[in-house]
Length: 431
Image (cartoon, rainbow, N blue to C red; front, side, top):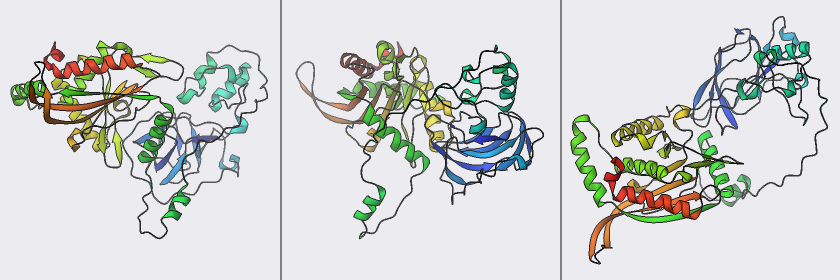
């Protein structure tokens, strides 16, 4: 029976994508692992591989089509012996969009083609079970209920090996699905039409949202609405750090390495997460995952949005190593050439707007992180010394936004105090 090839979910945040380019044409024979198409997501352009073998019977979505929802059928795969006549006439191709949005480089978690809904088994709760055509045939021969198997293919798809290694079990009749409770949509503000009417007598340029901007809007709106933020603020005296940095940079000059204040902040956060390990955690819905290593994400502004590349094992790395990697990640982020594993993960983030002259600000926690440090500019100002005398010092203001589901007030305070201690006594970070 013909199988639908579905639009894959290439990143955890992907809801739709652009079919940038087909790498096959109708009539081509493909095997598992063959490249089918290039898909653009909010952050990347990735190649999409075939999971099953067969013949491309019909292409349903044309090149350049944007806004294609995840799990939308994009092509039909024919099995051995099938022809185009076997394709249901109901599978009409979708009209392509005018032009693709600018794509960012990106993550891919290849999703698999799935069989048409009528031929797919259903679990007891009425949900669809995804399985390859060959897996379905073997399951039928062995008397297996596919709804009882755990798929090892992409996105849980049941493949040949899963049914070959399974023992026969009685088929379970699907139960009637319980009526879903009515969902009340959360208010989202005035509609686009309502806003446009307010400005009918004003000149303006309408700028469509690209994929990255849509995801940023959706994720941060959700984060602000669902994460119970609280904020901790401290002023940090930087004079000892600036003096120490100048000494190190003079010694590192021959190696072509120049440390920035941000490099010290990354190291200070990484070490502090080791000092306060209960803060080195992420929210996972029904549990908290406490990480062993300090994986620190750093926000990098790019045209049209931002990336948060992650420096893994930052607690065990030297300052020069972190500096070199951060410069490389930032450069490739701006060119949109980061691989998915380079901007996913981490337990804590840093957002530094000091170079833009911002004194202080409050950042939004980026889930599943438990916190983010908003860093302002270092400025000379009068301070009272420990001996009570007035002096001038370079002071940097920071605000730590915290997810209260993961980190309580005292734990957050201990973490911020550890960060401050590291930055005001920078040689401790090398101990």
